Length: 300
Length: 130
Image (cartoon, rainbow over all chains, first blue to last red; front, side, top):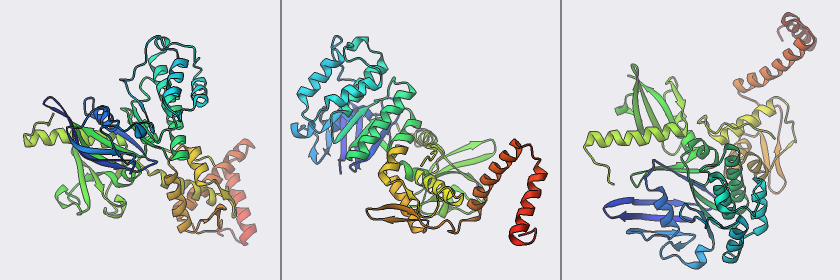
């Protein structure tokens, strides 16, 4: 496994930003972390990078413990984080020099070519770049690092649609060619659907769902509940993800684990496939409602 | 091989690839012996995970539409492979649309096209109802 965590937690004062998260990610997979603002996505990335210490649990990345970070492992990881803001007066060229000096695997030529791809002059200073251009520079530097693991916090933030496509295309090439493992965060679920292999929906520091996106496409359906199919009489292997009422119709999102939903449902049942965005909303809103009903207070 | 993928329809990508290949075989665009792009090539072109392409090819291989030969590539086996009615209809419909478009361009009426189809059928099978 490229990444493995067990009960990984991080508290800030009384707030548990990451709450007992356990997951694994195989090499050559692209995992997207999605979730509302303040869900704990960035904290999780920082834990994986060894930038902060866990208050509970453990994590290994590329076979080594994340904390304290080992120099040899850190050299195999490249990241894009808001906290690594370069000095305002630094030129792109200076950043490349800095990176080339610090990382043995850094491919300066590739980085320069990636700047040219977006018509960026390496003599431009950091503060003269737009937010999207700054993001591109950070992403390009990470991509040119020849890392085994890319950790990117909203790498496409501020990028225009064409640049976003290009960036995600480059990440995919990297993965297919070198079996690079990638963890990104994004709020744009259509991008996640297009570029990621796995998705983890995070809220209040918990992972609500972590699955392969292809599996979700195969397993999740929206069905119309009726006397033929009531929530209490679902086949054993079918999980009820959420429910809603539209007019006088009862709709439910269901998931069949370990196979296609099409095989278990009665043939005449009306059903349709759902997008990741719908799964996301069903899960995150469903959880709120359940907490309300049970009188639970979200644990953060 | 240009395949249009819809990432947002909820339909698994590997199935979309399978459907696209089946359609091209049924429509004759891919004929027997044609070499399909390698897993790496198609994954690169479609910008998707190689595992997704591999899964699609495995299913096509198992259903006998293509054969994966170690080190040589993936080849279309037989254009006569039996297709489900729905796919056969879809493939034929595509041909019919092209024929109609061509006929319209030449100023033919739809009755004329139907008449021609009838006589072509008669010619081939010796009677109008095939």
